[in-house]
Amino acid sequence: MSETTKKVKKETGVRTITAFERSKLIPLLPTKEHYDTLLRLKTIREELEWTELEWKTMFKQAGEKYKDNRGYELEVPAGQVVFEFGLIKDKEIDFGEVVFDLLAKIFKGLEEKGDLENDMVSLYEKFVVNK
Image (cartoon, rainbow, N blue to C red; front, side, top):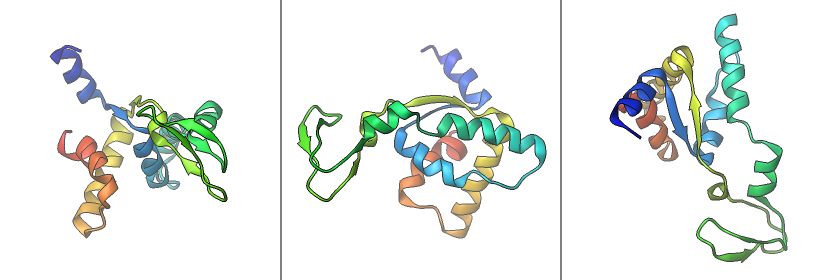
């Protein structure tokens, strides 16, 4: 990818989001907002949610054998379930200016209150530090 393409994507709110990051972003999306913003959030929420194929790929049940993202063959222990986020490909999502700015504001607020969680640092960097 050229530097120009990277710059344009960065400026338009396009970010590559991992499966794990998607799981952290979904609950952060506001459910109360202005009408126009809610419509945009609905679109982003749909982009972030798991498809049926993604669920089948990452959700493993007791006794099920599978290969992890490093190629190791594993079996889920009896009585357990496993979510293998590493089996899901990263997804490029265009958040648009309004939702991008809203998420940046949310992450800044969490950081200011000292409520930013360790597993949200990569998202904070994508929406605040590398804005």
